[in-house]
Image (cartoon, rainbow, N blue to C red):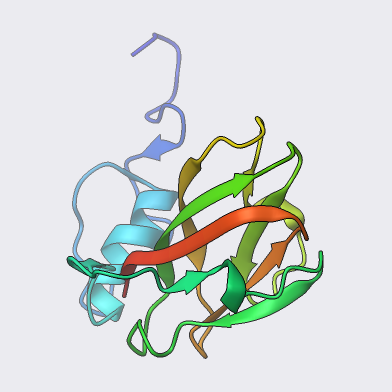
Length: 163
C-alpha cells in the first residue's frame, strides 16, 4: 500500500457502513459494496442467488413463426418454463437473415433504458449466428422482445435461470 494514505485504499475500509447488527458478523476489512451485498444478504435474505441449469431439452422454445416480428416490443411469457422467483434467464438465440441489419432484442419487461437491452444483430447475409444472453425477468416471469421483419430464421431456447 502506498505510504501517506489513510487506513483504506480504493474504498476498502476497516469499518462497516453501519454498525453490524441483526445477526451480521464483522469479517475484518470490507468495503461498502461488500458489506451491503454479502454480509447484509447473509443476515437478512433467505439465501444467495443460484443458477439452475435446465438440462437437455430436445426442442427450441420459440421459433420465428411463433414470434411477432414487426419492429415493436412484445411480451414473451416464460411462465411455462421458469419457476416463480426467477430473476434472470440465460437465453440462447440462433439468428439468420438474408440481409445484414436484421436483429432481435430482449429486455426485462417494463425497462425503458435501452442501455440494458440484449441485442443480437446479423452482420453478414445468410450466416447462422448464435448468441447467449442474460435477460432480467419480471415478477410475472415475462420479458419483452423486439424483432425486425425479415429474418430467415430465429430459434430461442431457455438454457437456465437464476433464482
